[in-house]
Length: 254
Image (tube, rainbow, N blue to C red; front, side, top):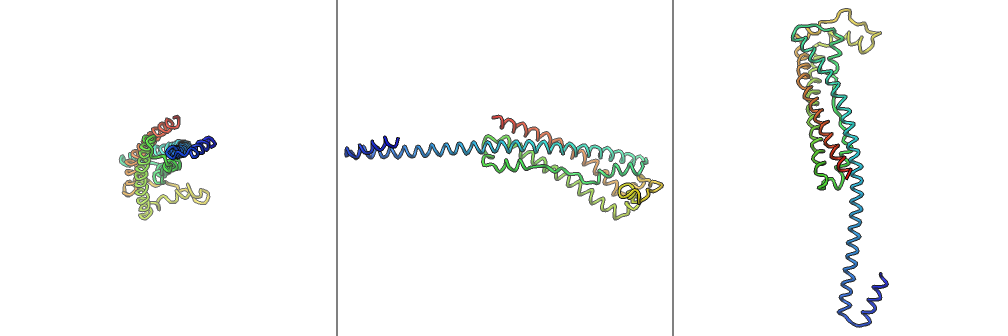
């Protein structure tokens, strides 16, 4: 091709036709520019394809993160479901002046005061959001679902933190007002060292004790109100995660 163009150029120069030579020069420049533009377009197309390939790989990681998050949410929901059942049982006994063995009370009380918190994995989502094509039109649906998914998790984090902080504050008050003094021997023998510490021969009437310990009652009442809300938030996160996974699978299949 270059040899052919050189022959044409030499022929025009030898003919002495300035007009024809100028037109040829313009045409040759246009041809070079066109070649550059085509090369740039091919490079851009290749770069875009690489970005799409990397994005699809990162989106696959997002679906794995969602699956892991949903496994954790399922486990947390089961823990909270059992804790809520015990909580409601203790409240009913309290309101009806019933009785309960201390060991049974502690088994229900423990999961309520031990902090439970959803710890989501966002690694895949963070990689996707850093992609240069994340804001492209083809990702409108996925962007919307990712933001909704993150918002639901943020709302749940607020609800859980509020409940956990409230219970921790109230439990600290129980230590200060002497509630644990009455059950400490049992806790020592049950959880610290059963060989070293003897279990008390007679259980304290723990339900009757609640009537004199408003803080303890407050823990149970607050948990019974907040726990169903948190479990419903878990369900919302799981449902939104399924929507996001479906959108990702559709995009990857394109």
